[in-house]
Amino acid sequence: MLHPDTELRFVSDAIGYGVVATRLIRKGTITWVMDDFDQRFSPKEVARMFSTYKQIVDKYTFRDGSGDYILCWDHARYINHSFRANCITTAYDFELAVRDIRPGEELTDDYGFLNLDEPFDCLPERGTRRTRVNPDDLLRQHKKWDRMLEGAFRRFKHVEQPLMSMLKPGVQRKASAVAGGAEQMDSILNCYYPREEAALVLVAS
Image: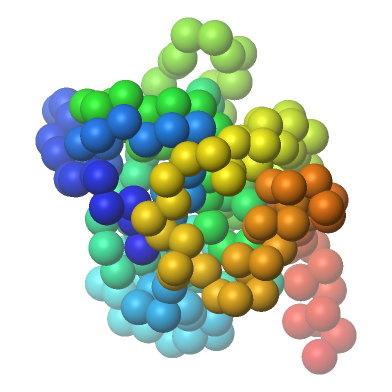
């Protein structure tokens, strides 16, 4: 579920539609939570799908750390990529704003932490040398993303959290403990899906 102060808007001919903030969303705010309406498909389920459904999976899903494909039921599936993303996923099935997101500004993810099946080239952006998203970007970039998340968690208890009630009780407790410094944050690297290991398991079975 997306933060309530967002809406779907047409961005440009090159980009298409995107998710835009309608009010200021402060750094440290939960911007998305995986909820019970989001759909989960195993690789075997996807393999059995008709081609039309596979195209939807290819376009609108991301893969979690177990390799399952996640299809968001709401506008979250329209969040666009940026190498300078203002939202980053955590190891707890929710995303945090890692800087203030102004009204009218797009919410963006770095698709490098979404376990994409194939690399793809991106439009050039100021402030980064990266031009391609790779399936193993979590291995390369997780330390940088962890630092950004740690900074966001320090603001967690000082901003409004309209999605807090959507977190499961255990996740609420963990997030609050991390934000208060009582527990260490789990690395975003926990979200990584190791394709090579999964392939070995399939071969062995």
